[in-house]
Image 1 (cartoon, one colour):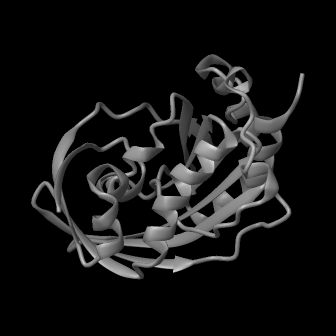
Image 2 (cartoon, rainbow, N blue to C red; image 1 turned 135 degrees about the vertical axis):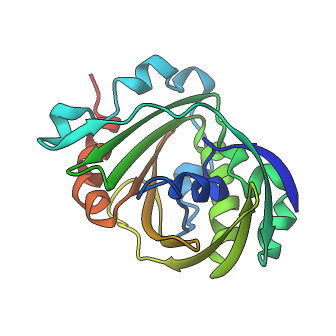
Length: 226
């Protein structure tokens, strides 16, 4: 399967960002369908981008040693997915995280310490139905592929996935997975945990220790009222 994608998308394109840096977006799955997912909130309850930006963690929330990382310019590459039929069946957009392009979203990435570690937070807002269906399809497909390969811009990247227990006491739905991106030059381990709470979807990814340290704080700020 060969598709044209922007490297800022979630999913397979995380492997591209893993090459020059040590943390990127990844995916994993623990798929539930609670009653709240069956009745999405009305469209006027969806948070607009400006409101989402204010709900992201900032340097004062994270503490000393964290620096904001500028967004990378969008880059398009040919991407071939090898060894994951489930992703191929979903089509190019799904395989590269394209179905996570919900209309309302915000993102922030920080480096920590010597900049070899990163943490990224993303917030999406839509009805509960749409959030659950969109992210669930991709995460379920990737969970079914414990090992596969991506060829991005001519560079082969081996990916292995390990499903992790999700923090079930947080939010309405949870997903978590550990991925390893390996090239001829380096190997990068990334954890991603996603939580849907009502009409908000939070995704925290990056160095495993940083994700564990800041996940609860990120959800608390994202879902705070007032």
